[in-house]
Image 1: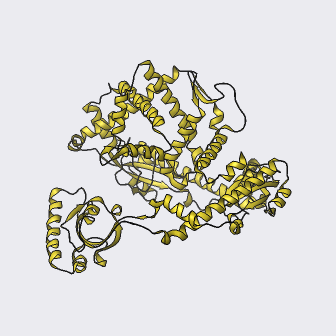
Image 2: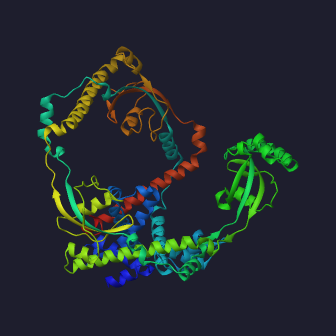
Image 3: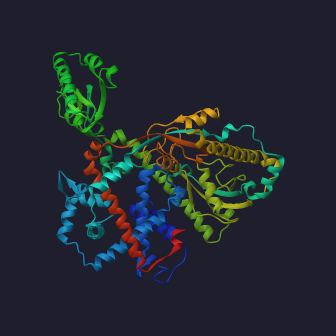
Length: 630
């Protein structure tokens, strides 16, 4: 089986099969389970949440987070966000709602489902449902119509249950006004900042240093280190074995013709008269009249570039309004639509976009085309060769692993594969001491093994590795003289903070007698600072995000002008006092009342639905197989 899979690595069905195997091993580990609970991630009233359901939910959640976090999403972040638990919670809630839908005899008819599918824009072409588009979109997301429609029906049932539960929720005018005032009331404060870094005369004693060292030995241990032997299987090792034929290039070209299509392009210049997207009608009209005058000049004057340099308000002004050659999708829609409908040499009447009014001159048009095979054959050949070299390297690494599984030792496998066993120096868990394309990945793989273990095939960069840990140096407490500088820094920071807090507390005790922050600062030869207005949901100017400080600030007023205590934000200490409070005007409250009521209703619905879910959980027998969350 392993040999067959490797020989067919390029086949997309095999790739999917290998992917499924990897996912199963990630979640299942090795072994089998016999009971229903052992075979499921959780049960809800003895109804299982299967491993496949969990894997799908987890993958969907990870994909969504990858859209948000991009390349910064890694295993550590996934663990910190507790994504596995989130995915399982979602599935449990879906089961609870589905069971409730069954109890309430809620159904979604075929007609309802069909109508819902036909309204989804992703499945439409030219404003109407298109069956081929439907299948194409589902295929792109690894779904088929049967699976998707089951899920869609379940989601529609869930919405019906939700609507039923939340249908009685209303928001009064008074409730909406109160919420708006709470959210939009603004506060400004005066404050004195006590910064620990300003206490430069603080120095730890030798006794304190020794006590810190002896009381916290684990803090001063060396990093564990490992040394590893490895076999490396690189694509370039097989260069002499691979040749790409003209027939292979032609076949790839024909199967991937869309990759070589060149969309229609135009070359254009423009003159921009700026006007804000949300400007009032008078401002828009004033800008349009100015643009009309320039348009009249442009159709008479052949020097469009000169007019652009004189009148345009856009960044291309200095280059005579020249925009270069571009595709339609690269421009905002009204501009793109107009430019691609024009004839070469034509000057357009003013066109409105979010940036303002544009007068466009079309300089050239380039029809859509397909790059000929002669133009791209070298690129295709290089791509096919790179893929084949990659496959051969992976295949050879897999063969080596099979030999190890069959009982050959590391050195024998090296001889069979004509590879040299390489040995690393000692390295740390983050890869310090290594010099690989992916040193951190190599170290991570090695640190997951014990001495004499041999890894699975690991891809690091473009190459594949088999790694054998040959020696481990365990962490040990380092001598005081080596870690003394680190201890001094730690203790100095601690002592500075203690001194700053003590000084801030002494100031706070004087605050009431002083009557104001300004007077308190004056009496103690300090500087009083002030903030701009901020709401409860905004960072505080000069201080930053400080929820506790903001909460305390909003409790101040002219009758209670100084907070009697000390507030800590990001290692600094603050004594704060009232400066100004600004409550929204009635006219503004009424202007946004309908929108506010919608926002409050949405929040209340969310809170009520979560409360209803929690109540269902208390009435349901839920068992979670925690090993799948580790």
